[in-house]
Image 1 (cartoon, rainbow, N blue to C red):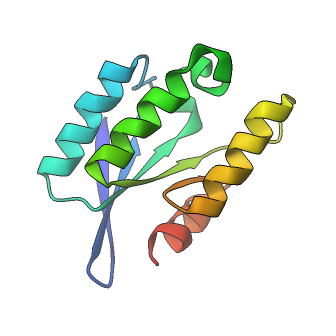
Image 2: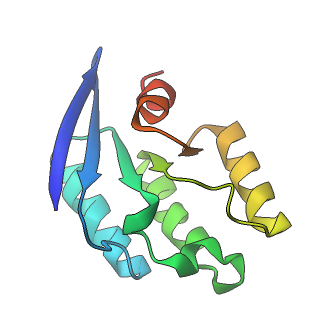
Length: 119
């Protein structure tokens, strides 16, 4: 796992890069969040491929548990990926509502993530 730093004005954004899945469980997300938080990052970018597929099945409640951790630490998150493949109305509604709150963002590109988190 590699963490790339992006600075936009005074906002320090961590881009988490890995070829492997990083978040399998809520505890994994808490470990990552703690690592990022204590390094002084304000916001985090992670890729869809690094998150367990169960995250995108809302019945598992993993998404809610993980996103609650980010909310508790007041760390904004952008998840970069192709979300059009999810056909479930509930996940599409969840993504739509998350993007409206701007604390959690589901975006297609790194550039979109930086734009959303840089505000």
